[in-house]
Image (cartoon, rainbow, N blue to C red; front, side, top):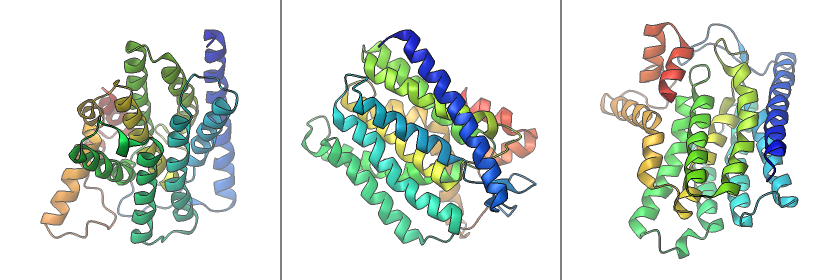
Length: 291
């Protein structure tokens, strides 16, 4: 692919992400789609909560256009795996963002179907690369990632910057293994995330909401699984890249269960939330997380 065209795509998608997010801010205030402060909040004023719509929509469009016009020499299944399952979990997220109160069992079932669809689309059940044990680890790991990403989206910029960090490393691995088309597709995906991050960085003018956090929680495992199948990633390298999110969310959930707290109730006991209060800065914690 022409380098100048690739750079133009990134610039345009970043601008589109920024402008789309600004529109969502105005829309949220007009229709009172705001996150008010509660036990879990790390913010002090009502803030729009549907910002994830911007990058969910734009990344989906990028995938459709790239597939339709054959911009990259990639198997069609890769496009479908990155497009459909993340949109499935995001659809439940937007309902929860707007109306609130989607039953946990419904959300979990929908997520279970989405993760299963990834495995079906990429034909993992027929691939010798995966043993039965590894399939189970990756399957339930992906399911957990969707939910932990939602848990970890609690301070300005942290969830968006983690996704940018993960995808950027994946791009580097892809280029190193000469999977240039796969790398270029991931580069174009970064644009909408950068555009959103400008308005999600401290002090955040908008949050990604459940639609954004669950979408990214599904998209990153899709990228990881694709990378494993291409022999770019190992499962362990993916775990390392998501290490702070996995450790923080898993330990906090375990601790709350052991101490007989209501694990599903709002709280601010994650390590990153405690650290942001001690440092009096969301930005520093988000940057340290990427470092």
